[in-house]
Image 1: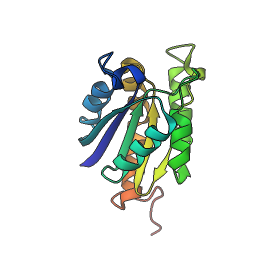
Image 2 (image 1 turned 45 degrees about the horizontal axis):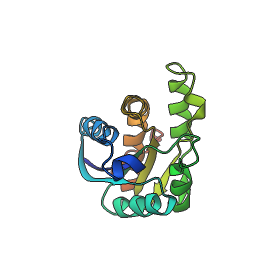
Image 3 (image 1 turned 90 degrees about the vertical axis):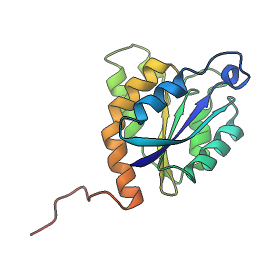
Length: 163
Protein backbone atom coordinates (compact mmCIF):
# COMPACT_ATOMS: atom_id res chain seq x y z
CA UNK A 1 0.00 0.00 0.00
CA UNK A 2 1.42 3.37 -0.99
CA UNK A 3 1.60 6.37 1.32
CA UNK A 4 -0.14 9.52 0.09
CA UNK A 5 0.11 13.14 1.17
CA UNK A 6 -2.59 15.67 0.28
CA UNK A 7 -1.78 19.38 0.33
CA UNK A 8 -4.59 21.89 -0.15
CA UNK A 9 -3.40 25.23 -1.50
CA UNK A 10 -5.89 27.95 -0.61
CA UNK A 11 -5.58 31.30 1.14
CA UNK A 12 -9.19 31.18 2.36
CA UNK A 13 -9.07 27.60 3.60
CA UNK A 14 -5.74 28.26 5.31
CA UNK A 15 -7.33 31.21 7.16
CA UNK A 16 -10.40 29.05 8.01
CA UNK A 17 -12.65 31.38 6.01
CA UNK A 18 -13.80 28.56 3.76
CA UNK A 19 -14.15 24.85 4.34
CA UNK A 20 -11.57 22.75 2.53
CA UNK A 21 -13.55 20.39 0.32
CA UNK A 22 -10.84 19.64 -2.25
CA UNK A 23 -8.34 18.01 0.10
CA UNK A 24 -10.84 15.63 1.71
CA UNK A 25 -12.25 14.70 -1.72
CA UNK A 26 -8.77 13.87 -3.02
CA UNK A 27 -7.94 11.91 0.14
CA UNK A 28 -11.13 9.85 -0.22
CA UNK A 29 -10.21 8.87 -3.79
CA UNK A 30 -6.60 8.17 -2.80
CA UNK A 31 -7.75 5.69 -0.15
CA UNK A 32 -9.39 3.66 -2.94
CA UNK A 33 -6.12 3.28 -4.92
CA UNK A 34 -5.40 1.51 -2.39
CA UNK A 35 -3.33 3.94 -0.41
CA UNK A 36 -2.92 5.18 3.11
CA UNK A 37 -3.20 8.94 3.54
CA UNK A 38 -0.32 9.75 5.87
CA UNK A 39 -0.20 13.54 5.57
CA UNK A 40 -2.72 16.32 5.06
CA UNK A 41 -1.96 20.00 5.19
CA UNK A 42 -3.51 23.28 4.11
CA UNK A 43 -1.18 26.08 3.04
CA UNK A 44 -1.76 29.57 1.63
CA UNK A 45 -1.13 30.49 -1.99
CA UNK A 46 2.48 31.33 -1.22
CA UNK A 47 5.24 29.89 -3.37
CA UNK A 48 7.72 29.31 -0.53
CA UNK A 49 5.12 27.76 1.77
CA UNK A 50 3.84 25.43 -0.96
CA UNK A 51 7.39 24.34 -1.80
CA UNK A 52 8.19 23.71 1.87
CA UNK A 53 5.00 21.65 2.31
CA UNK A 54 5.86 19.53 -0.73
CA UNK A 55 9.34 18.84 0.65
CA UNK A 56 8.01 18.01 4.14
CA UNK A 57 5.39 15.63 2.83
CA UNK A 58 7.66 14.00 0.22
CA UNK A 59 9.84 12.71 3.05
CA UNK A 60 6.80 10.88 4.47
CA UNK A 61 4.86 9.84 1.36
CA UNK A 62 5.30 8.04 -1.96
CA UNK A 63 2.72 10.21 -3.74
CA UNK A 64 2.16 13.89 -2.99
CA UNK A 65 -1.07 15.35 -4.36
CA UNK A 66 -1.63 19.09 -4.29
CA UNK A 67 -5.05 20.59 -4.95
CA UNK A 68 -5.45 24.23 -5.87
CA UNK A 69 -3.39 27.05 -7.29
CA UNK A 70 -3.00 25.69 -10.82
CA UNK A 71 -4.93 28.36 -12.70
CA UNK A 72 -3.97 31.75 -14.09
CA UNK A 73 -4.96 34.02 -11.20
CA UNK A 74 -2.09 36.11 -9.86
CA UNK A 75 -1.82 34.04 -6.64
CA UNK A 76 -1.96 30.66 -8.45
CA UNK A 77 1.66 29.63 -7.95
CA UNK A 78 1.47 25.90 -7.19
CA UNK A 79 3.17 24.87 -10.47
CA UNK A 80 6.03 27.31 -9.84
CA UNK A 81 6.48 26.05 -6.26
CA UNK A 82 6.45 22.48 -7.54
CA UNK A 83 9.05 23.22 -10.20
CA UNK A 84 11.20 24.87 -7.51
CA UNK A 85 11.53 21.57 -5.62
CA UNK A 86 11.16 18.70 -8.09
CA UNK A 87 14.26 16.96 -9.35
CA UNK A 88 12.76 15.52 -12.53
CA UNK A 89 9.66 16.65 -14.40
CA UNK A 90 6.93 14.22 -15.40
CA UNK A 91 4.96 16.32 -17.90
CA UNK A 92 2.70 13.51 -19.07
CA UNK A 93 0.53 13.78 -15.96
CA UNK A 94 -0.45 17.40 -16.59
CA UNK A 95 -0.82 16.75 -20.30
CA UNK A 96 -3.18 13.81 -19.71
CA UNK A 97 -5.27 15.70 -17.16
CA UNK A 98 -5.71 18.64 -19.55
CA UNK A 99 -6.42 16.35 -22.52
CA UNK A 100 -9.10 14.37 -20.71
CA UNK A 101 -10.56 17.43 -18.95
CA UNK A 102 -11.02 19.15 -22.32
CA UNK A 103 -13.89 16.72 -22.99
CA UNK A 104 -15.61 17.99 -19.82
CA UNK A 105 -14.90 21.73 -19.70
CA UNK A 106 -13.67 24.32 -22.20
CA UNK A 107 -11.54 25.80 -19.37
CA UNK A 108 -9.15 22.82 -19.18
CA UNK A 109 -6.48 24.54 -21.25
CA UNK A 110 -6.13 27.20 -18.54
CA UNK A 111 -4.83 24.60 -16.07
CA UNK A 112 -1.09 24.70 -15.47
CA UNK A 113 -0.86 21.52 -13.39
CA UNK A 114 2.54 19.89 -13.43
CA UNK A 115 4.21 16.85 -11.90
CA UNK A 116 7.63 15.52 -11.04
CA UNK A 117 9.73 13.67 -8.53
CA UNK A 118 11.21 14.66 -5.20
CA UNK A 119 13.51 11.89 -4.08
CA UNK A 120 11.45 8.71 -4.28
CA UNK A 121 8.12 10.56 -4.22
CA UNK A 122 5.92 11.56 -7.13
CA UNK A 123 4.28 15.00 -6.89
CA UNK A 124 1.15 15.76 -8.93
CA UNK A 125 -0.74 19.07 -9.00
CA UNK A 126 -4.53 18.76 -9.20
CA UNK A 127 -7.13 21.49 -9.74
CA UNK A 128 -8.65 23.25 -6.74
CA UNK A 129 -12.28 22.36 -7.38
CA UNK A 130 -13.24 19.10 -5.68
CA UNK A 131 -14.93 17.84 -8.86
CA UNK A 132 -11.96 18.70 -11.07
CA UNK A 133 -9.43 17.31 -8.61
CA UNK A 134 -11.26 13.98 -8.31
CA UNK A 135 -11.72 13.69 -12.08
CA UNK A 136 -8.08 14.50 -12.79
CA UNK A 137 -6.80 12.06 -10.17
CA UNK A 138 -8.96 9.40 -11.82
CA UNK A 139 -7.41 10.19 -15.20
CA UNK A 140 -3.84 9.61 -13.96
CA UNK A 141 -4.24 7.19 -11.04
CA UNK A 142 -3.05 4.09 -12.90
CA UNK A 143 0.03 5.84 -14.29
CA UNK A 144 0.74 7.36 -10.87
CA UNK A 145 0.66 3.95 -9.19
CA UNK A 146 3.02 2.60 -11.84
CA UNK A 147 5.39 5.55 -11.42
CA UNK A 148 5.38 5.21 -7.63
CA UNK A 149 6.22 1.53 -7.99
CA UNK A 150 9.20 2.41 -10.16
CA UNK A 151 10.36 5.15 -7.79
CA UNK A 152 10.13 2.95 -4.71
CA UNK A 153 11.63 -0.09 -6.41
CA UNK A 154 8.46 -2.11 -5.95
CA UNK A 155 7.14 -1.81 -9.50
CA UNK A 156 7.74 -3.82 -12.61
CA UNK A 157 9.76 -2.65 -15.59
CA UNK A 158 7.74 -1.09 -18.39
CA UNK A 159 8.90 -3.57 -21.01
CA UNK A 160 8.65 -7.33 -21.02
CA UNK A 161 11.78 -9.26 -20.13
CA UNK A 162 13.63 -10.89 -23.05
CA UNK A 163 13.47 -14.68 -22.98
